[in-house]
Length: 428
Image (cartoon, helix red, strand yellow):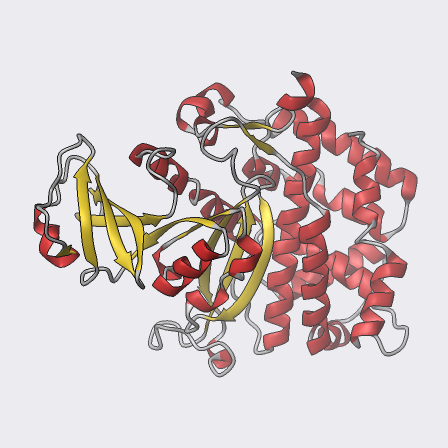
């Protein structure tokens, strides 16, 4: 990859002609104004990605600086308030998720090499303005009458969003999972909120693989249970999990066969020191290929989706804003996801160009030194300036946002699980 590839990729989305044309087709733009869709979208991405933005007026100030205009708050707010803006940002986010990506990890021979892709699913909720409770009702009505849950599927290999869905916090997590047909040949990881017996049976029949944390299993039938040291915990007769639970050891895991919806699946019990009770991982990965410790290691990869949520909230302004307009709040959520995807894309490009292991969190933290300059060159359509600023950004990030302890990551970080940086294949 060359540095000049980056601005070309950015312009596939952040193009004046393309964005304004898209906005017209969606219905956001009726006639030409001082505030164009191209300028507004770029300002949203710039503002939410540059710091922890709390006020809509921050976006206006960024817009005026980027475009060298003096637009007043009311006409600017009128454009932000358009419901079509939320739809526009959603469409842009979908395009970004498929275009601004890099393969940052490769699967070595081991845990993940037999799967086409590894998908990780999770949700993150946050409160919004109370007056939005009819649009986005919250689960905790006294504390947060209005709340949103963002359901995200990330691709482990790219480290970026595969898809994202915005729902009220009261919606069931199970209803927002990918279609099982899309998971054929892939591995799916998710927490217990996404578990259902029907889903795992259908996923197995569709040719997909899964490791999920399970719940509500007390009445399921256990047909075999073997401790990690090889000792069986059962006699010949099958038994309900609720009756076996008291005999489950705390110092070692137990590998079991369990009947779910008429199918026999694999269930592993671990003692949680934090929760002071057993937790359960359910999977269709075979014992002769994946040991108990392998399943445990694979499920730990689910933490990567938590890291991207943390990045969104801490450095890309994913939170509730002081607005009564649901469409504004939704637009800002999409802008946050776009900004974090852009940063991770640039981080991945730096890895591939300079063959150096990058920290996406550090890239997000250091935006004060490069973020605005890049987006200013885009919105002002200064081609040469954009190439210069992208080049400066890449060299700056190479020195200031690389992983501090790459050797340690091989022992205790993500790379301990049969993964390696994708650029290794280019230098080997």
